[in-house]
Image (cartoon, rainbow, N blue to C red):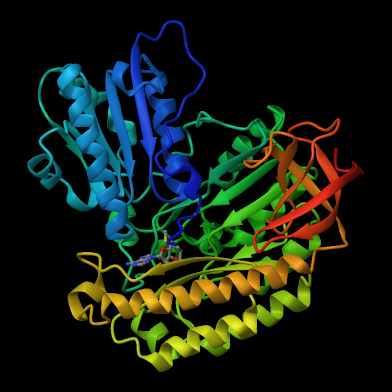
Length: 481
Ligand code: SAM
């Protein structure tokens, strides 16, 4: 059971409001992390101004774009399979053009055009504003590539269109790239160095969402705690900033406070937090504002100090426990989730037991667990042999998943008997008669629909649970409506 952040949405094609003056049809499909889905909204916004309406009918598309993920080999194989399908459609509709966007485009660059003859255009995550020029190139019969990574680009000036939206929850990108250089991870190579977006443009986007009726935003970045705005530019160049720029800089706690204060009824979430960068002021800011949700996604990857060092995670197991203790002390109600990698090179049985004992200490509410997948070009791939046999990786992964299931149930049981505020997001997947929403801890809650509607904040009495879902009944509107 491998999980990526929102598995249900993998490969979703995206549709937005149609403009009557637009005559060309765009089919856009996204894979991987939330940032990719958010990027597709930026791409659709840029192309809406270039005469494209989105469609969910692959067969009628003039342009097919696939926003790709490189995080594990499996993610790349999924995209390769999709390209085969696009190839079959292209035989029926030879005028259809195919473009590859995102991390896989950045990793493979020109090689994509050689390996996948069907591809007309390859565009990296920092080059979306060049799409109008690149599309002109392919319209004129040439292949087009732009995989230049940027020091500045944050797309802060592009108002993303919300694709396939429930009208209630939305993602807002606050940083791009990553400077962490975890040895297993391809992200710094595919998304470039870390830069933060102007808080003013973030606030404007959030305010626009609120005005359009949205009730919850998730601030997105590979490492949100590292957010630092000092007038633009790379995070690593902050030391070269002027005294004035340093004095007026906004960090992540500052950004959270800014958004929370501007919109007291809006729910605010964020993802992903990196333990090495998560500071006490962020936890204290979460405690200060009721509308900042009490949930932290805090990947640890391994419980072994030796493996954490080999992964270049810049904290120890003990420092992680200290952070967990601080979260639980300041925010006793806070839910915590993990990402874990099983079978990193040289991982021994003892290291694996350290991971299980770390999990026992924290008892995470949720988890996203993966078998190590060697990624070409990463430090681990260059320096370490992928030496844990596949069946051992799988067995360790299963043990981690089983333990997480047990802890998930332990955590959901803690909610039974309580009455909690839930924001309704849509109909339950299992029953037309039930709503699905989330509490502040991000746990899914299902309950009978009655007179309530999507976007309502409802107090729900929790009567029962599974390892991942709370089951209850509404007792009335919450005061947040
Ligand atoms: N930036 C976040 C961090 O470092 O904590 C998350 C980045 S990544 C998009 C999401 C998750 O994918 C990681 O936390 C990690 O567990 C997993 N992952 C990344 N590279 C991997 C690899 N080579 N093999 C298996 N899992 C990997």
